[in-house]
Every structure is written in C-alpha cells, then in structure tokens.
Figure 1 (tube, rainbow, N blue to C red):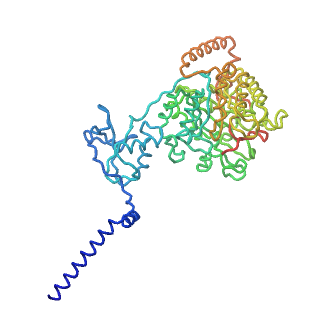
Figure 2 (figure 1 turned 90 degrees about the horizontal axis):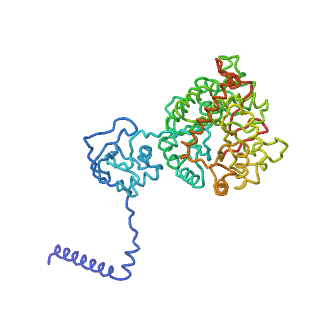
Figure 3 (figure 1 turned 90 degrees about the vertical axis):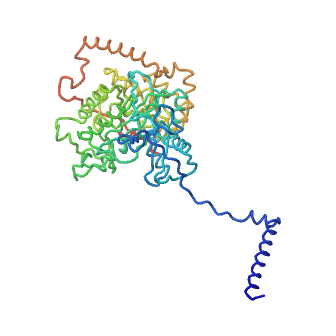
Length: 555
C-alpha cells in the first residue's frame, strides 16, 4: 500500500468514526440537554416585508392639499366598493411612527394609537418599526379633506356645564376620555385651549407671528365634530394679550419700558404683548376668526386686558402716542367692539373671562387692567367671572376665603348682576375645581358653589382645574342631577331650537322697551367715534389683579 493511499484511508476512517460518535451523542439524554441549552442566535431586526404596491387608479397622485403625496387606489382588498382608498409610497426608509404622525390628521381616527393599530393591520406590519424605501402602504381611514364642521348656533342663554382642558390634553386619548366621562355624568360642554398665555397655539395657524411646532390638535374641525357627536358645546379659549411668544420673540409688539426702551417686564417676567398695538390685535382676531370658521360654537377671550402688576408707571403703550386722549379702558372696549362684530358674522358666541374681584369695582383694579365691567359686557354674549373662593385672599374679613365658598360665590354673583343689569349679558362663572388654599375641597364643595351661583343669577358654570383633574366634579354631578331644580336646568344641544325661539322673543321685547327709552339703552360710543369707556377696567386671568387676589399655582 502506498503512503498516499494510507493517508487517504486514515482520514476517511477518522471522519466515519467521528460522525458516528456525534450521532450517538445526539441520541443520548445528555446530548439532547446540550442541544436545548445551546444559545440561539437572535434574529436580526427586519424592516417590514414588502407587500405588493397597489396599482393607482388612472395613475392619480394627489398633488396639493392635506392629502398631497398620497396615491388613490381602487384594487386594495380592504377598500369598500365604489370608494376611494389611498396609499403612500415611502421614498426612503421611514419609521412607522413618522408615517402615522404625517397622515393621522387626515383620517377619521381621533388618536395616533388608533391609526397605528389600523395601519399595521391593513399592511401586515406586525411589530416592524421601519418600512423600506419604495414600499407601498395602504393608509386606512382617510376621509375627504378639508373636514367641514358647522357651528351649532346657540343662544347666550344656553345653559353650559363645562370643564376646561389644555390643548395638549384635549388632543390626547386621556382628553377624549375626559369628554366621554364628563358627558356620562351630565356635562354638556368643554372649554379647550386654542392659545394659552405662553403663546403656544394648539391648531395649525399660518401666521408669521405664530410659534412653529406640531399642534396638539392638528385637525380642529375633526375634533369639534367629535365634541358635537358627544353632545358637547365646543368653547375655544384664546388667551389674548398675555403672550410670552410675542413678548420674547417679537419684541416690537411687546409692552416697552419708559426707562430703558427695552421690552417691559411684569415683576421680572417678559410675558406681555401690547394690547393697544394694532398688529397684535389683528393677530389675535385672525386666529379667533379662523377658529370660528372651524365649527366651534363659542370663542372665549381670556387675558383681554392690560397687565395688572409690575411697575405700571414704567409701562409704555402704543396708544399713548396714536390716541393720547384715550384710556386703557377705551382701548379694550374699542378692540372688543370690532371683535364682537366680526365673530357674530360667523355665527358664534363670544364670551369674556374676568377676575372675580372685579365685582368689587375697586379703583386700583379698574385703573390698571383697562376693563370696565358695565362697558365690556355690551361687547360679548357671556361674561365669565372667575369667582374661585380661594382667590379672595384678605377680602370681606375672611382669613381663609377658600373655605367660604357660599359667601364668595353668592356675594360675587350679586355684585356682577348689579354691574351688568343694563346690558342683559349672561353670567356664567368659572368655579373652583382644585384644592388650593382650602381644606374642604370635596364633591360637596362643588355642589355648594353650583347651588350658590344658580341662586344668585348664574346661568350654567365652568370648572377650572389646571391639571384637568375632575374627580370631585365627576363625583358631585349625580347628586346634582338628582336634584336639578337646585343646581341646573339640564339644557342639551337638542334644546337649542326651543331656546333660540325663546331668545328671539326676549330680544324682540327688549327692542320694544328700548324704543320707549332710547337714551337709557345707548351704549357708550354709539353716537360716533371710538367706544368711550369710564376710566375703569378689568378682565380675567389666572394671575393676580391685586396683592389680595392670588392665582392658582400652575402644575
């Protein structure tokens, strides 16, 4: 046997022996255990498996508007017959979350989570986090854009029972649940932020002065439709002249310091735009008109006033040069007279928020803010005084006013009724739904406020909680519903036709009475020129008007 043959035979024999040994080892219990314990290599993260691209109907791709970039399809299995479906073709690898964020506003889904779930199911995405470039996705739930939602015209006397929500809360799943829960316990309205005092805007608004960020409510008509479907009167809150965005990023529109010429600060804070600046007024009014056209039923102005604190003598305003004979009160009244006329053309109500302390008509409060209650009441449908008991610190001899809700609600409403007697404005107060500066906050605390307001001329109510925590109002509502005669009438959206007919009769009766005494019913300024207001004023805010009136702390 040659040496080469011997080596070949040796190698072959060795392979056979080793192979047999491995087969034997695998068949033994020890071998099976070893196989089970062998670590498996983790599967690499994969992009979503490509699915066949839908064939566009007539090759049509949407070129403009909210659906620009989508392709119409008609052959997708999930499309309903005779309906248009839409697909999106990824131009590059994209996160699924980014696709959801981009197209969610154009769908019927109220939250991103709802849309993402449907998107994954419609396209078999499973748990994929990215899609590949060129991959075609069916976008479920797309509806014709823009969504058109009409306001439900309600008379001022429509009894509102509302809670407040921030814009970010309103657009979230938790916010939708607040709406449903509030409706379940007997509420019929929601106040939600369009613009807060930091200047942030929660809806799309194309304006050079507006901050640039993703809005919390990207499709306002769709959100209002949701409120209407849940039996809710939609109230859009706009904080007007306390605007940090304007004060900090558009200093030409801010209040200015006489001493330095720089933007003026209220107690060190750069937060105030100039209420008398025509450009600032136009900015706020443009936002209000856009919102009114989006289907809301009521626009609510907050911070419709001049700054109340800080070095007042150092604060310089535009009107002092353009209208040197005007007062702060005349500026506010002039703005409101125009805003009221413009918004009424669009069929929505206008409500104003004012400090509860304004019921006392103290000269120090009236002089600073530029709002005179009897005058501004003529330029709104509803006046909403913030009569939170805890905010009347040091007044009427009460050491702990927060624990005297019946006194301060009753006293405030009686004073506001007297101040607005000749204007016929509806008084719908903001009530305290938070535990600040009170040891007695409870469902009963809520009921005492509502009963005291109704007994003293209040028509409906608004609950304020900066954190949107309404556990106590939820708990209080069933007992109030069981004894409605004491707390509220129980108006619903379905009652609006009847209430509107009653309102028209009231207006007609007032017109007859006005003809009998025209001079007594003429509002200041109606004879011509700008609205003339007594040198007094005041509006609402969550800040203080006077050292004796503290504000609810922000979360």
